[in-house]
View 1 (spheres, rainbow, N blue to C red):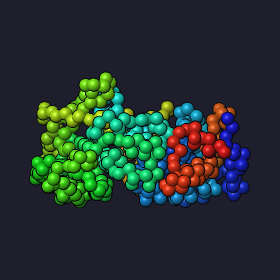
View 2 (view 1 turned 180 degrees about the vertical axis):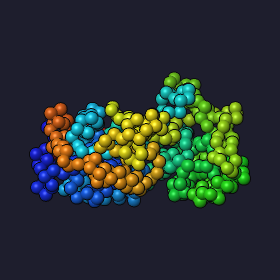
View 3 (view 1 turned 30 degrees about the horizontal axis):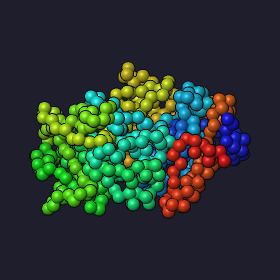
View 4 (view 1 turned 60 degrees about the horizontal axis):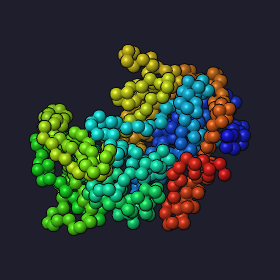
Length: 483
C-alpha cells in the first residue's frame, strides 16, 4: 500500500533547507524522542530530524501511559506538536524498527540515529502461578484503559471477584488502583478508552490491596499521587497500625529525604477509623512488609487466579545503608480475582544493538552507545545514541527526559563539532527512508495524518461530552489516517 501523501510530504519545505543537511533519525516519539528532536533543532540550524514510531500515533506514554484523569500532564503534547510541525522535522508513524526497517539500514541512511523508544515490556516476578488467567502487568492494564491498540483486546475480568491485588506501591500502582476505585461517573468525563469505561462501570471490584516489600517510609510513590488516591470520596483506607511504627533507621531515612517523610505523614493520617465499611463501600488496603511468594489457582475455575500468597518480610540494614526486605517464612493468602504486577517496565533489545539484559538498557556513556561495554573499554558505536528509559532505565517523570535529552544532545553536538558527524558524508535521510518503506509496501503515517486521527477523536468525544473518544484499534487508526 502506498505511503500516505508521499510526494507532497517528501517535498515539505525542502527549498528552505541546506542542500546537504545533517540528517538525524530519532526512534520513538514519546517525551524522550520529542525533547531530543527539539534540542537538536534549536542547537543546529542545518540539522534535519525525522522522528519515527511503530505506532500511527505520536507522544508515547503521554498518550498511552498518563492516567486519563491527569489531563494537565498531557498539555505537553502541544509543545511536541510544534516540534513536529517545524519545517526541518517530520513524524513518520507506523514504522517498526526490526520489521519495517532494520537498525543497520537506518544507520546507513542517516548521519546519526538516536534511540528513544522507551520500555514496552515488563519485569517478571519469576514465581509459581504467574501464568494464571487474570494476572497482568500494570503496563498492559494501563495500555488497556488508555486505548493503546496493542491492548484493545486485553479484556480483564472485573466481575468474578470483589478484590484486586496490586503488587508494588509506586506511582503506576497508585494509578491503576485509582482507576479501579474512582467512581466511573468521574472517569466518564476523561479520555479513558470507551471499552475500559464500559468494563469499569460493570466492575464488582470494591477492595484493592497495594502490596509493598518494605514499609511506609520506603513506599515508592510521590506525595502528589498518594494525596490524590487518598482523596477519593467515600473511600475507606486500611493500614495496620503496627506497620506505621518507625525504627531509628526509618527516622534517618526520613530526615534525609523530604519526600519520604511527606509520604509517611500522609499515610499515618489516612487510616479510616470509627466505623466498619458499609456494604458496597470501596476499600484501599495498604499492605506493607510483604512480598509475593506465588499465585494460587482458583478452586472452582481451572486455570484462573484464586489468590495471592504473600510472605511476611522484615527490614535488614541500619542508618548507614539501604534497608532491604528479607523473608521471614511466615505466609498469608489474599483471595482475589485480579492481580496486577507493578514491579517495573523493561526495554527490549533491537537486532544489531548492544543491550544489557539485566538492567534493561543500552550500554552508554552520557548517551553515546558503547560498542563493547562488557570488555570495559569506551569504544563507541559511531553515530548511534540513546535517550530516555532505554538509556537510564524506567525512572523519573516526563520532565526527567528533558534533562536526559540535553545530556545526549551535548554528545551529539560534540561529535558534530569534532567532525565525527558531518554533512560531507551525504546520506539519503527521509527521502531514502520513504522510498525503502514504499518498496516494502509499508504504510506510513505522517503528522498531518495523525492530525486527522486527533480531530476525529475530538469530534467523537464532543458527542459524548468528553475531551476525546480514542480510536483503539489499528484498523480504526489507519482508516482515519488514510482518509
